Amino acid sequence: ATYTGAFDAMRNYMSRVTKQPKSMFSFNSKGSCETCKGSGTTTFDLVYMASVTATCTSCHGKRFNDSVLDMRDPKTKLNMADLLEQTVAESAKYWRARKETSIANKLDTLVSVGLGYLVLGQSLSSLSGGECQRVKISKFLADRGQQPSTIVLDEPSRGLHAADVENLLRTLESLRSADHRTIIIEHR
Image (cartoon, rainbow, N blue to C red; front, side, top):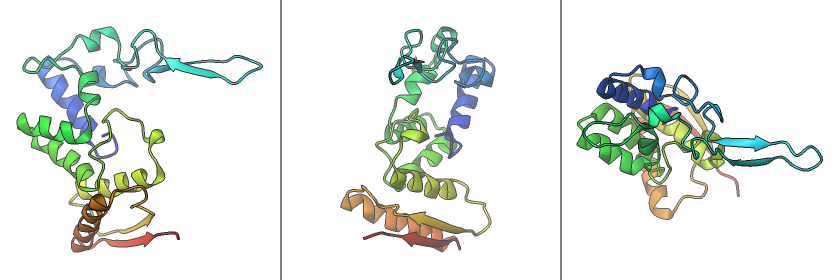
């Protein structure tokens, strides 16, 4: 959600409806859990053994401090952590129902490349190589006013179901229609 700009728009929305500063809805700023610094986990260095990472006992993996977790959308009663626990597809539907089409449209680009199953708050480092390639494609789709570019993709279809490969091909065609050049590398 961060890479496509949807997270920033979600933070703006929560700031507007709760009348709190936007920085409160960022887990690497004022709103972060003090214990885990917004990572959702704590790591224990066991000196002679491998380090152990566990879910933060203060925020229970939600990454925000208690005051932010108490700030809810007045209409839906969801807080920022609840919103980030939705899948991309669920979130796109949620924002469209709230008439926040700019957020929904950004998330729709992730759905169009077969990433509707990802959880919004999932970190980029947990994604596979193919998923990262498709996030990159969705970024180009979200930035519609961008100058034509050459996009190099290394196995963007890796791990995709056959039905999702068709969606990916349609998406790549739309990039080509927008005058972007795509170079796709598939290994055998």
